[in-house]
Amino acid sequence: MRKNKFVQKSYEIAKERYAETGVNVEAVLEQLQKLQVSIHCWQADDVTGFENAVNLGGGGIQATGNYPGKARNIDELRADIEKVTTLIGGKHRFSLHEIYGDFGTKIVDRDEVEPAHFTSWMQWAKEQDLKLDFNSTSFGHPKSGDLTLSNPDKSVRDFWIEHTKRCRAVAEEMGKFQNDPCIMNLWIHDGSKDITVNRYLYRSLLEKSLDEIFAQEYKNMKDCVESKLFGIALESYTVGSHDFYLGYGAKKQKMVTLDMGHFHLSESVSDKISALLLFTPEIMLHVSRPVRWDSDHVVILNDDLLDLSKEIVRAGALDKVHVGLDFFDASINRIGAYVIGIRATQKSFVQALLEPAAKLKEYEANGQYFERLALIEEAKGLPWNAVWDYFCLKNNIPVGEDYIAEVQQYEREVTSKR
Image (tube, one colour):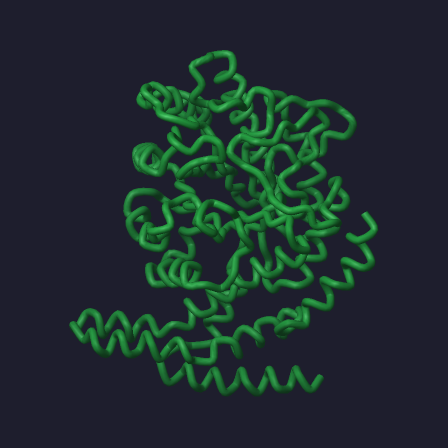
């Protein structure tokens, strides 16, 4: 109770301080409350899924670590997500890969998946007040190999085209059920370990596959295509590169997914926001933290994340940029990883929304670059954390580090017994 009073008092002081810079803190809280983060299912079980067929892994993707207590089935994964949502504020989304379908005891190959395999997920999400997003799954299958949608073997290519078509149909039914468009992400690992001499062929095949997949138009789902710098064991050539999908997205008016781990470390993902918004209708983000490569470390509040959030807010693009998470660290408590990453993402947007952007833009327009830089620097020390603590208090979730004890208790009572 004493802590709550301290949070309330700190918030009132912060509100007055921000008002001096022209920022309406109450309006910021309203925006933050509406910010939906698409929480990824694959952190809970290390990207294993619930197929009954043999999952080969690979395909340019892998989780590292063996911390005990991962989700082994749908019920355990749902329980974990339900716990996570008690430790974060706001109403959010939940992103599923196709391999997480409710297949029961049946073996359902990926070119046979149907909306019925996700009916229980739709009902569960409704009960949890979550909206669903979806992803096709091209990795970890006997027909994955190095090439899927760009494979010169027509039988293999057609298999993955059918799979992706069916995933779009699933996403359409999800969007219809929840009365909110389901965003379906398409990412393939296609590439080559070493020197590739027929790059044009594979990219032309990928373009034709995509055209066939997207020929069917839907009203309740939105497509996005995700690029990659390289995949594990496919380091020398990536068919679906950023340039490829940037061109395809602009030409076909499809959403392009920007994954923070899918670029060279010297590139600025935040700088791509304003460029892409001019040529594509919307953007999908996969918020991740690369360490020297696309290693999908747990998201933390660092400069890369802050720059990304600020660029979105400065561009007035909160309604055009969709924020999803994509990390899977199996070396630490998985529930804790979720909470750290989600809260870090929200904290970055708190700071971005609290930035005195109107004054900064005024300085810039007037050529007052000293004033602009000075205010940017001073804004870094403003009491944003008091506003964040109040947001937590208002949402009846743990303030500050208090969530650590709740994660530990859940581990003692639930995950340690798996």
